[in-house]
Image (cartoon, rainbow, N blue to C red; front, top):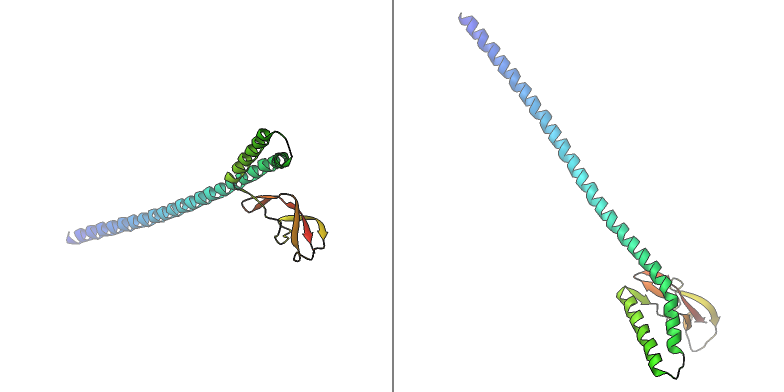
Length: 169
């Protein structure tokens, strides 16, 4: 009888030990699944952050491109307003009106990040200027800009239109 009791207890201990081992294995598997899911979540979060950054860059680039295109189409209007303001007229009010519209136009461009490219007296830079003529002038240095035919403009670091210039020496 006692032997049976001992055997039953051993079987019971063995069964409990097996159950414990099974439960430990289940716990290990569940921990692995949790780690895999946590890793997957971290990867998805990183991918989403990269997506947001990429989308912001694309949106900014698209905005700059569209803004540059719109301003490019307005530059001939600006050129004509400048010519109109330089034209002699007997009607001073008319001339003042043209100059006010020109100043307002330039203010709007400036507010949108558009700047004029500096020319006369500066060194010729092919990334900013386009030479239409070369002249000899002893009063000016080498590759110095003598005259500007058409103003150039930039928006940020991007050249919208190169300045047309006369370069000395």
